[in-house]
Length: 220
Image (cartoon, rainbow, N blue to C red; front, side, top):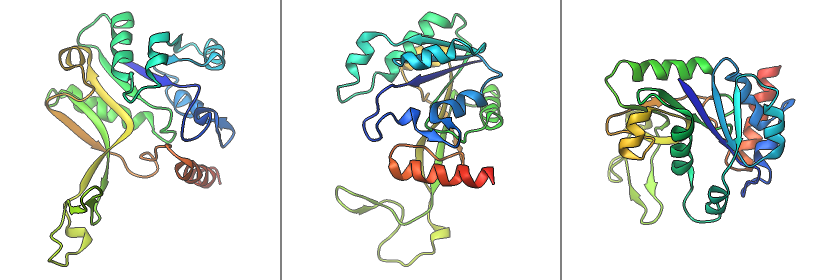
């Protein structure tokens, strides 16, 4: 089992997001420390992260390739290319279980990840992806078409079909599955629901504010 993490130096919505303080630590360190018992590979363009990770025995942090940095300015993320590069460079076994996760999920616990890994090990699914369930009246914004309810009927929210939304917690798969599909999600995935606070993903300032409140509450 190998864990792969991408960490950027520069973020668009929150400047230097991964270095924002959450409690006593910068954001990027929370998940990395949670995973200190496992083999973690970090692809980064940050010199400071490279320097700090050099003192962590379980971390193999390496410099992001320039072509991946250049692609960051485009509309599409180079994440799949970076995963492919990681697999070619560091993973020999086609059956190796790979976990890709994000430091923007600071409350994610190793126990949860291991439970998800065990689901993959059953052989019933070819991948596992973390999601958040929402059970509210929902529309598509572009045409305001209802997604999970009949607008002509007044329903109880607890009776609505849940909306399953991807979050950045984790994608779990074997090397061979990714190589076959060039995708983190296979043809027969298991969608693993995360609850608060593990499903908190920091994308914007509101998320960061919530995370700080949760962190303060957990510390008290």
